[in-house]
Image 1 (spheres, rainbow, N blue to C red):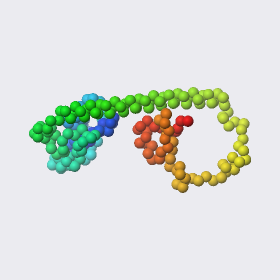
Image 2: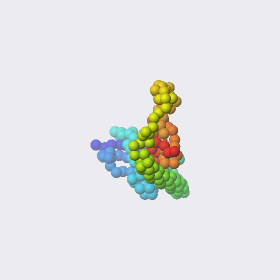
Image 3: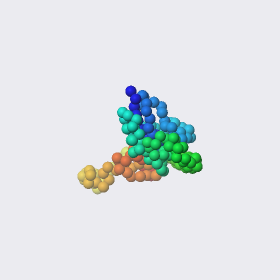
Length: 210
């Protein structure tokens, strides 16, 4: 059986993407596009930094070509150089489009962006390691000084006990409801819990530093 597909390849480093069409008998084949920009980007960053997803499948090539017109995006962030449904480089060459200068310029820009992101990632990783080392040493020191716990031998005052017994404002009416503290090792943020995944990708994790 032949499949007619529209696929998307995304650069996991900088988010740039490529939309293409492909006919195949195996939806899990290793085809990663024929565009010059996407091929150059894969050579530069390594295929492990790209992911492919099938956006839609069709029964005929005509349907696939029509869908490509809707899906293809040109401009910033896109590795596509011509509109969808045009037949790739055949369209570029037939219309005498000079894409070489733009290709070099965009590749340089992609390179600078990837380098900047990598430096930021390394800085976050270094600070995270330092923070974990400092935390581990602090915990060991506290355990050494207070083997039975920091509250051992102490008592709450009556005023404190009364406050502890008083019902707290909990649930949606509490302004802090649904929020949490996160940190990347050197900066704290309070966020909504449902946005944790977004910040985890940037090197943040639960907790905060003082």
